[in-house]
Length: 161
Image (cartoon, rainbow, N blue to C red; front, side):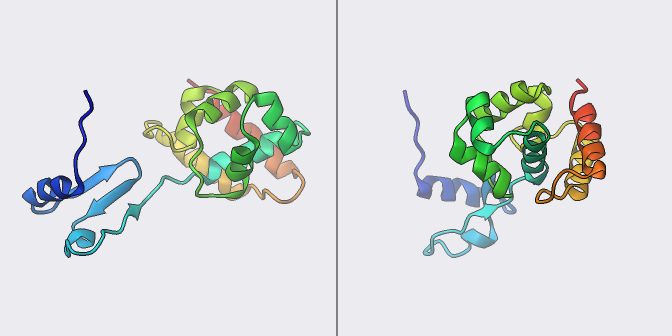
């Protein structure tokens, strides 16, 4: 049995509460966007930062001396998505891709899923270290000794269960 809800039903249920916010994944309706029911509501998109994930993938690939194509082949992931992960800071990766990369880079899947924004952040230290890592890494230059140290420190934190 499949249950579907119409947009009008969702709006009606949302108006029942005074200060409502309806969310589904990273998209949501807020009261302000639904004030005028004659207009299509705007989506409020607030994805978690996936910049650390993209930087991590790019630096690990560079550390291993792999091209984007070779990493995609070796990790059995889609080349187009890998390019998006590395180049588009707002791209939300597929769970399967994160899983494949975690196995390829030998880091815990659960932690890499958090860094990729695909699970709720339960490890505040991991979130803080992810942002520090992203801030310290320059993804366009060859790995500097500082980037190498930042990458190794991040891998150590990421490897903790």
